[in-house]
Figure 1 (cartoon, one colour):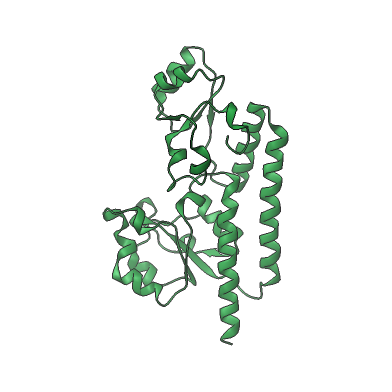
Figure 2 (tube, rainbow, N blue to C red):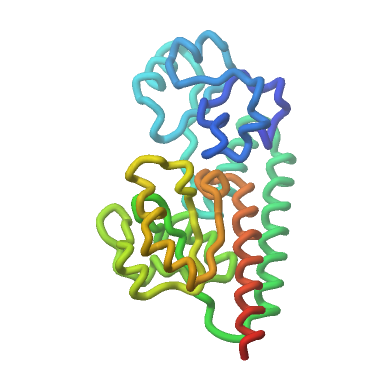
Length: 250
């Protein structure tokens, strides 16, 4: 919404929009009413349109609809095409079709620029990368992270490695068959509980001494918006640096 419509048309945003660890737009969301998702606070804002996620609390959605409020469920995009579809749907709902198409055009133009640069420097198999997250999670095929890696010119290690329950990539597996690039998809500083211990493990830190690594902050890839192209561009630069280092050692 912040990308599509003027601020004065937005009555409220999810409290998650103001969390800088999860939202790239946390600064832009400041000053707009923050909501937790209770029906009472939504009704107090008296909006013309309520946008809810697929996993928004069902009772709130049900009550708002029974009270005659217009509620639209917005699916979570798990692909770049899904992002385009969501943008177009929201643009249609808000009467901002031109703005929606402009967002998509900029998104596609930046992706094409990355692709053009990658083709110019592709003289062999794609380098392998893995986006390693807290709790040893790694995103495989059918995820936004997988498409980010692919669009940036990498082969996603999580597609071929034996990933355990819940998408966990054991640290032992990562160390025994390390990728060309380690993408830190979370920062251990943001997770001070045991969930982040895999990123603080001495074995992982030792691996980073032998393999290049790059940060891809969670707020760049967590949500399916056109701004995810920033993560693609970041990784594309890392790929170019990998190739330059390889050429320098030949």
